[in-house]
Amino acid sequence: MQNNEQLLSVIENYLAQTELPAEPELLYAPIGYSLSGGGKRLRPMLVMLSCGIFTDDVQQALPAAAAIEMFHNFTLLHDDIMDNAAMRRGKPSVFARWGQNVAILSGDAMLICAYRLLGGVPGHLLPQVMATFNEMALGVCEGQQYDMDFERRTKVSVVDYMHMIELKTSVLLAGAATIGATIGGAPEEDCRKLRRFALELGLAFQLQDDLLDSYGDEELGKAIGGDILEGKKTYLMVTAMSRADETTREVLRRTYRDETISNAEKIATVKTIYDRLDVPHLTEQQISLRFDRALGILDTLSVDASRTRQLRAFAESLMGRRK
Image (cartoon, rainbow, N blue to C red; front, side, top):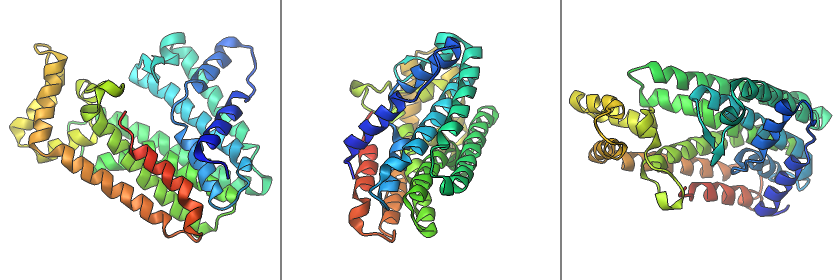
């Protein structure tokens, strides 16, 4: 099988060659714009690498990989509308550039295009792949709804938060890994194990993202403190709220809304509380726990360890990021 860099290039080329009509321009131009935004291509890479564990013919997984990337970008278009987000991957979001109505309709078209791409899956596997895809898609929607619900709730537990990110983030990774394994001819038990692997990896990935937002290296391109300024209920925030006394909880609740202090002071205030409550260390422990669980699952698959080497390396590269 090709190495990971080669696989990423294959995915990029396949997406670039995905035919989109020229007209109506305001429907299709935003789709091409969104797909050309790059990103880690985490989800299609999981499709290809999971497939490659069980077969060297990974080209057959390309339509499904593209479908999942199309679906993922569809969710981003609609997320940006719900979040009123002006930027996505360092450039104006579709919502900001073309407006809400265009972003809604182009997103809808992307979802339809995703299902059309799935038509390239080998016919005898399509019902199984479609069932996995549909379960994954509904899970992502459920996770997004929980995330929006949390904005209105004064209290969110760590358990609630972990359930939300499992749906919003991990389920899409789990669907990608399961579909890739299915296309590769994996036994049912290995498909279940890879789903669990991807769920744990997704949790570790999202928790790391939460941590980097407050404690990442700004010199490497990560703006620090955005979640704090938005008052988002991240793992750090819900953990701090669960460990703090009522006076400290009130500071956490109101600091991001305090117009009398600067953004830098808001970030510093909240991070001081996080540090005092040992929140960064607790978050790092949870990241390590989830990531170690994920890698441990790979050791239980019914294949030689050499077959999982590329997927393991890809997972390690994700968790070694600093921006």
